[in-house]
Length: 148
Image 1: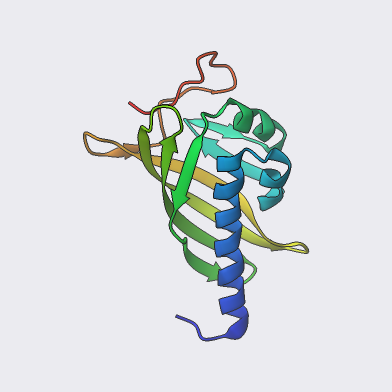
Image 2: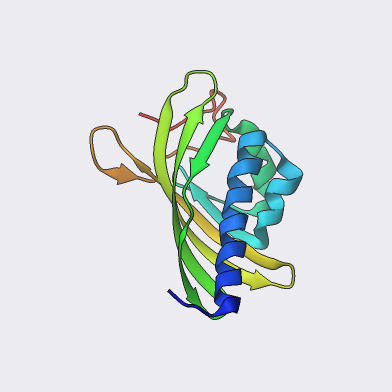
């Protein structure tokens, strides 16, 4: 691990960025949730890629619940970085859990570190893992969860 004070500060900032993402998503704070992303973000879940313009609708369509995540494991490359953050999502109504991880790309912006790409991989009860049951939650009137 680097003992460089700037690299340590960068790591703490990215950890806080990821923590804010989970907190804002759990508390449904859409105006703050969008601040963790770059304007050209690519977010992938359930076999679909979303731009920032569709993300408020995506958050609104998501089931209510709590995200609990670890600190991301981050690799730096100058003003860019990649990371993996494991998390659990607990559905508020059923308490069903989804185990998953995010694979991220971060970039330093004039406003600090932001998420440029984020993709979700789900761990399955029967073993294996995938990006979720392919569907678009914005066009699914039942708000499918992909939690088979």
